Length: 337
Image (cartoon, rainbow, N blue to C red; front, top):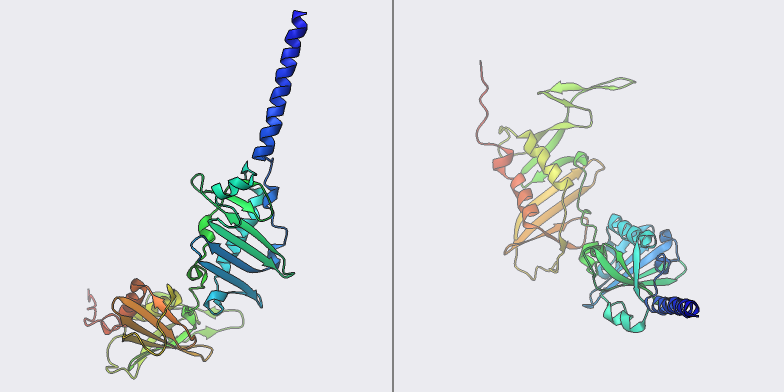
């Protein structure tokens, strides 16, 4: 009899544990994977991305003619590589380790993933005009964030690069659009000084181009030395490395943001550089850099917008075209020994 009572007590205790497990399992909503985060649309069909922050800042990115643009900035070109990385991060959510932390409606506000209270709201719209939503919330640990898919109850804790979900339009601009490939520039005009590429003579054969050794450097046919034309002092010795450095500066040119200054020059500024580039394809691009206080702006003849430049970028370009750099005052003395 004592044995039967003991057995019944053990059975009752086991049933109690099962009941508790079922109850809390339903409350916590623990699932073996993060299927509730799956975006049910091919990412190659996404044509619109909207990101809204809890500070009411927002950005809308649009895909038109296979090119991404920032709608908030008059459809200015967007950084396609950054958008691709962002979509890859969202796509990988379903395959990353994720912990379900809650399913209740009250928990949404606590973890900041409700329809109203959130850290970031991400909307993805495809070609069929179907929109899916993700809510990013509070951060439980380093590199982790609470996240919930719109229309779903389960709240997960996942590893996700939240910095990629920026709601600032400035962060999505393609800041390389002012760049010009170094080898496409054939002429540089700085005031009265004109620098022009002088292609070295090469011997062409049917099979290859013979590369000559000039001044210790091997130059192929598509490279060249530089010479001055119509310079105020044509006899001055041009620093070849300095001339080439100008084209490298343009090749790496990046702006920091679109300027709020308008083209009516309502802000008093001083023009500090006018640089005109002639390209192989016949195009001519003019850059005008102006300075107002400590801020630099750039106008480009092939763009309507006015661009803000970082001080380091602007000052380095200005210095690279200075007479002191292009025409060193002292000519190197050759060692006769």
